[in-house]
Length: 433
Image (cartoon, rainbow, N blue to C red; front, side, top):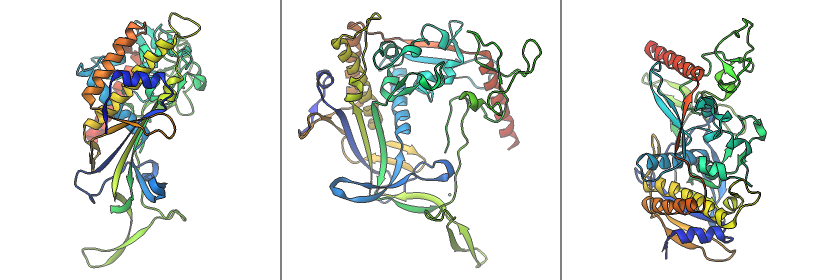
């Protein structure tokens, strides 16, 4: 029997030793049981297929339908839509590409950027005339860690929930790192491969091979480390960024998707099939990946309360945090995760072309507490979760925790120019086709 979840439920879970909130939801294709579904393809056109041990010790061939990273992106988009619809108010960093020279204007938020608030898009933008990472807001990332997550909580709380690694900041690989506290994935159970025909996406339309970037001799506080100019102010040639000066060397641009044929797992040789052509003659053709039939799809979402409990939130530059303030901040993050997951479950899981899934039962959340104890079960809709999130945010503000509004950034003129040239090149290529 499921109960109604309340803010007190979340707060008590955070103040106790409860391990996690867990939601397991089963789906069938929108076309009905037995309809084919198409998983994502990765580099080389591969599907993520593996043998898994299921409940009761059953061993089954499974295929990944939606990865942890993709599920995180969907949940972030659900939160962004709720924010835009004014159903909640979240701290948000926004880079607005609205320069009149651009063929297409757009904006990128910290809920869309691949590396969240630590993304190169924001690094190469200005806040009040200063490069974001050199500004008072941007410097928060330089000192953030699990013992002092207060500033990041107020600036980009979703980074504490979905995870963050500030690998492109001034400290490189030693930059701030926060593990994912919410993990979700969707798999197809008892997957059988069919017969028929990956990469990193980036919100900026930058063609990776189009332009050569050079290292700026003196970037200072008002320009990124790279420039499109081949020579410096003194007329001396500027060195390329990396080996070839590609935008990808500074974490800008994407990676072209790819596909391939079905190969023998042992020999890696392409598998061929014999077919009869219109002329009646036999010919051998390579087998191309073509979707799966499954017995069911399963979505598993876990919010680790243990991970959230590691975060501390000292106020006013204090050396230690107040346990009551810690609980208030952690409660917001748990409520944020519940809202993100509930909002995505309120919609049918239309993952991609020919992979539309429908839940076969009402989603329920288990609160996993003490070992051997039957978990308490709760039902939670997106609207209910947003209501709990609003209550948690208000309680956190009263406890003295920061909660910023939208922080608008202006992309540096060189970044705008890089985007402009890429847009024009893309338009020209499309016109030639």
